[in-house]
Length: 74
Image (cartoon, rainbow, N blue to C red; front, side, top):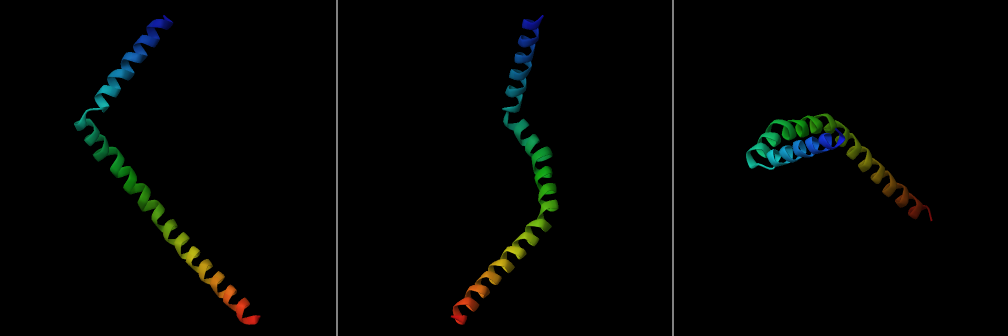
């Protein structure tokens, strides 16, 4: 029975891989699963990317200002 399960499992996996390898199936997966998922993820992450960028720029300018003030003080 165990040998039958392994054989059946391997056959199913091979069939799935063969089907997924076809160009039209790849296009369907890309169009209906990958693209919508990526756009949804990007829409949700976008505000955090902007906030992180603004904070990074502010910290950079603060560091430059501190270095400038330390140089002037000496």
